[in-house]
Length: 243
Image (cartoon, rainbow, N blue to C red):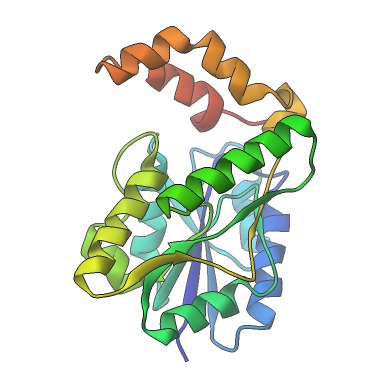
């Protein structure tokens, strides 16, 4: 039986880390192999590290301002044959790890992602959900929860080392590598990611539409190569956000 290491990048996630770990433990209870939980504490100044250790997780310390590097630090420390990643404010459904194992054991799949479902819904969030389903369906680049054998992540060099859209870039790398191996990049069929609405709760359900309008100039400049403004926006919304 294969072993699984679940990687959780975490920046000041004392409010959410335990429920994430608890969801992994529930998933581990129906997966007959060994489950390792690794929390990568990224510039944490709160109780995230203590809570993670109290709940049985291995803790890795990291100071990077790049989510790809944070995830890769966890992968490097992992002892499992299979890698699964999930963000600290999200949760996985109970059958997730078992389904990951079954799909990889099947031999047809290089790895994959997971469908995303919000933990609550409103009209704007239904719109976001629909956009996610359409984009995933058209591209096949499912993300949210990433999963593949550790050897596969090692072969592609881990997560794409960029500050934004690293999930799409990594999905493309896995898909391309899988094609060479005669395998497909896929998604979980029975399980899904329970996506946190913390930012919407804090900043409003139309958050990302407002951000696109308000920062249109920054986004256009980034598309033309000037990413200085985009880096500041990413820091504000992701790397320094503690809502």
